[in-house]
Amino acid sequence: MPPEFFENNIRVKQDMDALGVLGDLGWYCVGAVLWAKNYELPNVVSALPAGVTRNSAGIVLSCTACLNYDQDHKTTGWNAETEKVVVDNQIPQEAFMVQELARLAQGIKKCEFRPDNRWPEISRKTQIVVDAIKKSIDLDCKPVYL
Image (cartoon, rainbow, N blue to C red; front, side):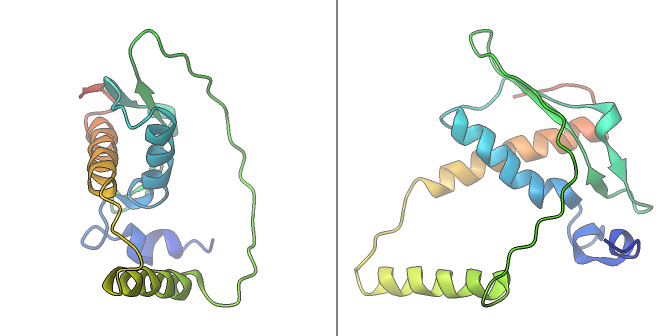
């Protein structure tokens, strides 16, 4: 990414998306953990001090967090290395997302599909954990109890 991205992109503007990477890619990482844990919320969430990077506006550009569950759960961590991935699509991903949303909405309108009522609860739990990670970052990586 060009350096100006980290200062000027909508994802790193205080008045546009104050969660930065946490509200963008972090949402999906948290969602994947919750899915793996059958949507059970962790007991404690902590950001790790060495993993937090911010831009000049204080927006989180990178972070690492630990989601702690009760003693019966075991986890294994890893260090991910940066890798460039290019996906060749017929249309931009944003256009595909709008097409898919329109297809699903049309299917519901025509009674071909039914809304999946799980998503409001899944989204709420994901946001609870994302907010807890942000709170931990703002508290100098102190634990946040859920």
